[in-house]
Length: 402
Image (cartoon, rainbow, N blue to C red; front, side):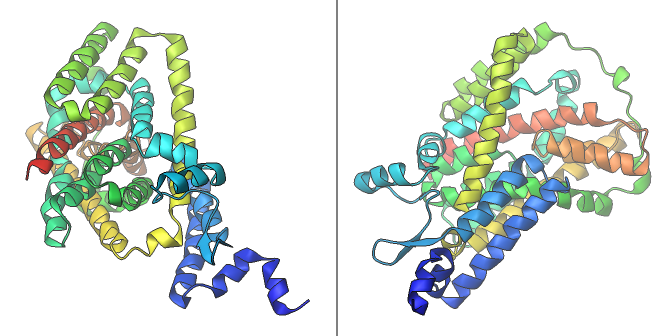
């Protein structure tokens, strides 16, 4: 048995010899980054619901590259770029995640399903009790969504591409999926992957931003939830119906997202146990396969796209600007209220439900373990979902006109 025969026994290792040295190094780096994300999720330093499936599959897909056909390097996970009908049929039979990708990712269905599940676990109490405060913080926390658009255009992206990248500033995964599918389908894969990886990174980055902008004494301001009026289930139910219909009327291009989110809220407030249990399980299952598929899309062939690096930079800028906008608005709310509002709730307006609200609570407890601001933080967090959806509707409606 010669050396070639031995190599053929290990096609994954042999595939390294067929790659350019730079690509091979990036591939090894991606494997270790995937393992690192798994570890960070396991230690709860990053969101485990996303980091565990994304990191594990990211490591596996880059390890599992093999040679097929005429020396072509590929994997048996998913091929996001295949569009030819004959090749697509082969891919559906060969790649085990291809059916899930084509029938849920490529048409935006996964975004709608996730949004419906998010609606079921969303509490509107504090949003409806303090709607003006919540919406003020939420619109301020769209700073990254607004400013990244001209920045991306200045860096050479088209207006549609720039809008798809800028919506990352809303920190709402389903919105990013939907907007990129509608406006820049050719960049859907890197934008979607970058968005969800960065949403997990919010856990790690935003606390440092908070410490930089919010003095320690202000982080310790207590907020009594009993000071806010009680909102009845009937109010929340009828609000969800009215808001869903009105937003679908005003922004019909984003109607599936509005309908799914507010239907989920309506199911929660109508207290239909069967539907709530089903949607809760559906959210868990769709989140699992969402992360698993996103990890599989993080192969070396996707990452080596020369535009991916720019998208990564712009995505981080969008989230940082949105965080700054939310915190500055939180400081304004603190000042206007005479010191009664903890400015940390401003970061919750970056609408990664409920991640950013939990970040606000965690940073408050670092100063005083007895503080509870999570209920108040959920108000702007929910408002952020609504404002991001509105901007998504505006971008998808107006950008194609230019």
